[in-house]
Image (cartoon, rainbow, N blue to C red; front, side):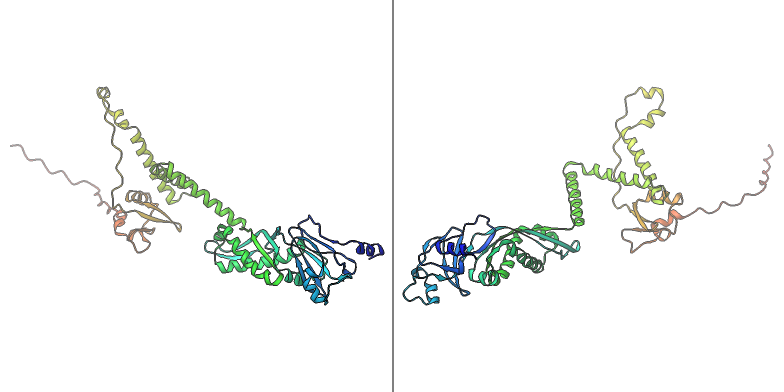
Amino acid sequence: MGLLDKLKGELVDIIEWIDDSRSTLAWRFPRYQNEIKNGAQLIVREGQKAVFVYRGALADQFEPGHYELKSENLPIMSTLQGWKHGFDSPFRSEVYFINTRPVTDLRWGTPQPVTVRDPDFKMVQIRANGLCVVKIADIETFLKEVIGTDSAVEADEIAELLRRVISMAFSDMVLETGLGAIDLQGQQVALSGKLAEFVQERVDDEFGLEIPEMTMNISLPDEITQAMTRGVAKGVEASGFVENVDLNKYQQAQAANAMLAAAENEGGSVMGDMMQMGMGAVMAGQMAQSMPGMGANQQVAPQQQQAAPAPTAAPAPPPLPGQTMYHVDHGGQPGGPYNMAQMQAGIGNGQVTGQTLVWSHGMAGWAAAQTVPQLQALFATPPPMPPRSATPPPVPPSPAAG
């Protein structure tokens, strides 16, 4: 320090800190050889604390206000320096201003993903980030562990320290809760307070800091987010159908779509052919119901066509209760269920053979169709016709006329 600074230090008798950055946590007042005059003016503004340090030991502390430095308001300093009757000459002491306002814009994030066991998606790697509010709670601990001999401490200097602490605290919190990835994301607001408690336990006695508040945002992998989006969309679509669509018509449409997809199979599969037969029967039935008496009207006599139209036929009754339905093995893929008429049609055109595996409710397992008692009659073939003689037998003579 030059002569000008020395003279300025001797003339200046006001000790204060003017800072509007809100990012400085502690600042040491610069003074030549740390000399302070008797009667110097100390100004501590709101959001600040002034502490005197003598030979590394914390001395007097001052709350916001305007003070005249005398031995009466420096009791600890008087004891440390042995002032029995006050002091007239300058005394040496370091003066630190501590920012007591919270720093609210400290951002944090997990540098590496944290693996979580999820009941739905098994092992999932999640990330988390958010904001952390930090303030100085214990000045003496902060002075010893953080400030040391530095002339100033910025928020950025403790940000990296806090990020490491928060990352480890987040891993411990996830392990303790035992929640899956989906539940962690769903409860992230409530878990933010719990994470603040985990961090507080690691920075209060160690660094003299306090964590009044934390925010947390948990991020899931893109694959899981997309799967959840598809599941929600399907659920909303199904819910809308249930509320707004006739379920009977919806089931009929779904069955028609399945039959159409099987019928369009170019591989000529057994199931596709059987579906084609069933779809043709259904379409014929629907046409008969939509145009009742159409076939009969084409065959009636002209005089009957001029008669009154026949009453509308009643719709076809539903399948009889207790009707046995069968599932058929289609190249390793089960198909059906099919009723007895459909099974008979498939057996008749050779698409279902006696060795084709079938299963029905009540059967212990899949079995060859020809071994199922209810289907054995469908495989029965009539015996061969008796051989015809080469020449017909002679006609017996007619009786003589009387």
